Length: 558
Image (tube, rainbow, N blue to C red; front, side, top):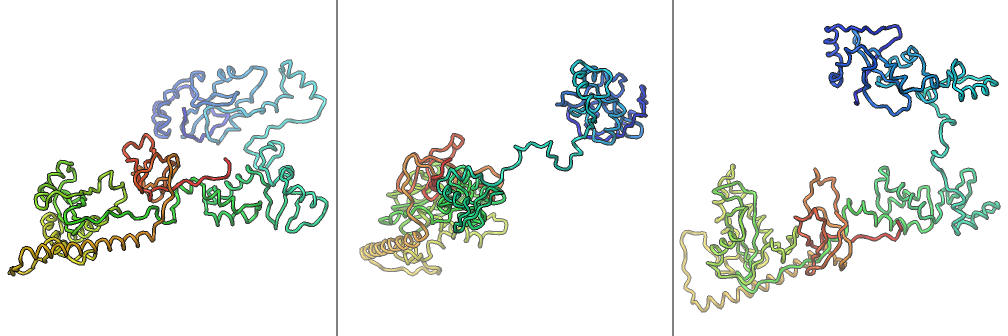
């Protein structure tokens, strides 16, 4: 049983009372730590052989004992000599007297079995009266010499003792000449220096067994030795996994070997811990791939949900429907738990009944057309979400209990505003007129044929402006992007950690990249299917190329 350490005071003059006062035992409960209460019943027993030991002991010779409480709050050391005789060999390995044991252990930290130090009994060897045959043989041999065998506890060995230390445990220093001689590049150089010849930039330190190059230790072309230098000078917590330049400067301070620049660059670039935890500073992979401009109004739709609104009339989210041609928006109160059937019913009521069935419906959550965590395919809806949220911030009440009543006005405000891409408002693009803010509506006598022709011309201008806007947007977006390497099935990649929900307490000091993962196939022009572990069954295995980083293979063995 493991118990916390205690201190005790004992002396050989004190005697053990066989009968304990009940009041004294009650006082003991107050001074004995709670961890010992379950063993207090043994204190009332007077036979030492019945006192069980408190904890295990690994020594081959041991003395079983127990602490007994005293009136002054201290503890008395009780020893079971019967069990002591059972675990020792009588008349062969005698133990010191009890009074000497108590004197030695007085004031020390308690342990229930007193360990008899190895070889401590030798100090009584020459004065022992009863010897075994084996001991008598050595006693006769040693009687010819005048010596004494004092016992020195290990706690007194505060200074280094050469006789008690193994020489094979000392750390190795320097590079043995035998290792250097195996390197053909240094064999002739060492021979020249050994003959006393002067070699430029090289010196020899025979005492330290080191070859120096400009006061830096020369490391031979030994792969294991160089790899050990990499790990000690770069991978240790004192170095902190620095980059290529800092690693090179750290190693160059006092070490040198041939072609070290290229080898260090290779080692650092292929370090998996750095690849997993450090940020990537190159341009984002994957050029922008915008959607094609629709041929007319309400032919292509984009939809998105804005969630986490206060619950009002069972509504807790907003469904945003965008006509990608005219930029006209429809804001509809909805539910975060809406199913595909609910979404279809909303589209029938608010879109199809007024504008007909669109040619293309682009859903952001569609697996086939939009990659997870990559909303750049269609930034129109993302921008509309920001504008709607800003509008609601300004006009909703302090308690935010009227946000759904402002959606029709926010919809009108957005659709009546001129857009930079089309140079006109969505309402004008659809109806070829801008609505009036006045209470008096001025009628316009325009023939129906002229209106149709004018609408077609307006829509052609809008399409041309949208094409120009998308090309310009792609041009500026691709400035901060680069064409990714063409990954093949079987290649291994790192996966950006932001694309997977993690369980660690904070992402601030979490790894930036996860992996390694194998590429199974290429899907489309910018997406790849990865082989994920079994515990990631809930994660969709298709990722945009911007979330992938190819693994840099090292040319250094092992």
